Amino acid sequence: MAKKNLTTEDILHIAKLGNLTLNEKEIEMFKKQLSSVIDYIDKLQEINTENVEPSSQITGLTDVLREDKIEEKRTLTSDQALANTKSKEGNLFKVKAILTE
Amino acid sequence: MDLLGLTIKDVSKKLKSHVFSCRELVEECFSNIKKNDKKINAFLTLNEKEALKKAGEYDELIKNDKEIFDKKPLLGIPTVLKDLYTAKGIRTTAGSKIIEDYYPPFDSTVVKKLMDAGVIVIGKTNEDAWGHGSSGENTDYEPTKNPYDLSRVPGGSSSGSGAAVAYGAALVGTGTDTGSSVRLPAGYCNLVGLKPTYGRVSRYGVIAMASSFDSIGHMTKTVYDNAKVLEVTAGLDPYDSTTFPIKVGQYTKVLGQNIKGLKIGLPKEYFVKGLDNKVNNSIRNSLKVMEKLGATVKEISLPHTDYAMAAYYILVPSEVSSNLSRYDGVRYGGTREIFGAEAKRRIMLGSYTLSSGYYDAYYLKAAKVRTLIKQDFEKAFKEIDILIVPTSPTLPFKLGEKVDDPLKMYLSDIFLCPVNLAGIAGLSVPSGFVDGLPVGMQIIGPQFSEELLYKVAYLFEQETQYYKIHPEFTNG
Image 1 (cartoon, rainbow over the protein chains, first blue to last red):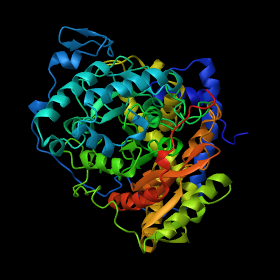
Image 2: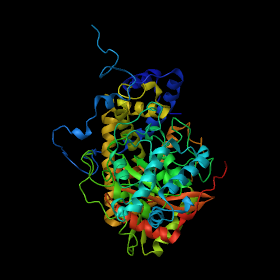
Image 3: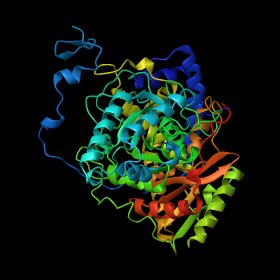
Image 4: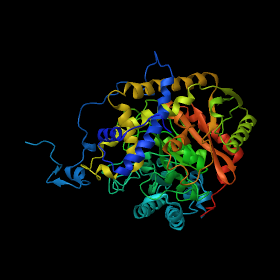
């Protein structure tokens, strides 16, 4: 039995953050599975990490920059860029409206 | 032609001396695939027409240009690409259904380098979708089976690449290793599998899983072959700012040098309850071989080992949730409800650990623990040269055994993920067989120690030659 008990509301909230829609069956399954994983990762709270710096770039590289110019060789034509879409109009990607009047 | 008995080294020699042609070699690959892949499911896409065309072109080159093998060090070598590798004009699905009809308009850096070096792309291989998994069962297609025992998993996530090389469909299987995904299939399929140092090989064009972890590696039958491929794939890439400005080693040149006086560390936290006795015995026997070769073995400690998996399963899903946010069905692929269960789990877990109010407790905390784990390894490498641990705590497990319990599945990688947290290098090599199943031994070294790992692995392989044991497709 998991100590952490995610509720349906929790699951729906997290799914929304990840832009996912779930069916009833998935909600029940994830409730159980994610609760047990969160129980497990909660183990980290045991360790003292005072004065420890977080690691994000693990080999220690910093500030790798490139010249700010367009590289023709890597530029896709609009036909190439649009080749895989299921929804286009002319030379443009067509998406659902996100703003209303 | 017995493709299973051939290595890159043999094939180059035989192509050069016209024992067989490139076309015959490629035809043999497809003949093996047609005979066996229905049982194994290693492939998602075959590249037969293009491969045969390329083979014909290379046969002409071999006839007309005496120096062609110097210019193209992997000329004619049949290679399979994990389906996370973007390849221009070849369907690239990431093992997922959401981009099942995606034909990329560009090549990843590694694919370009391999093709410039002369490899022939045989096809794209099956995998846990997006690299999420340890068994291959999280594919959105049919799961891959282990050629050594068809009722068992080949290890994941680069499941198809491992199985394909193991059953003789190709000589090189490319993979990605974010937490285990090259080394585990190598261990379960009796192959040599490299997780290079983070930043040693370009990630450009390889579909991202967790960007601060993803390491671009490969599987082969022998150590020489593995080193030969890294000589091609490694190096600085202007398109991946995390590639490290350090010279690429001459990995094949050091093979054969002795390892007298090499200090091997055994982390005591890895040889504990949960480690299968038979696997433990296999590793202990392999350590005796190392001692015979002049190495010394001593126990050391990596004190934060017990926290590695928890840190991993915070940081990786966090990065996953960010990387998978781009799949919105606008530029390519379908919409987000098509994601499989594991992708949804990881997106949700990552969304949770990054969410307001939890970020400090989870993500930031785990990033700090990552530092402690890295320091554990750094301290150990002051005392010893390399570490040796089992690749997996168990033998290859049964299909279906862990699918309903994600946490149990995650813990299959317990000996592998710490290496990714620390960004260091790990090489899984065959350690023999138990009950007819392969056992993998992982050799771990500091960042950019690939030359040393190959040197050690090569001498061990010369003594043991487990790569000569081929699969028999049992329990089909």
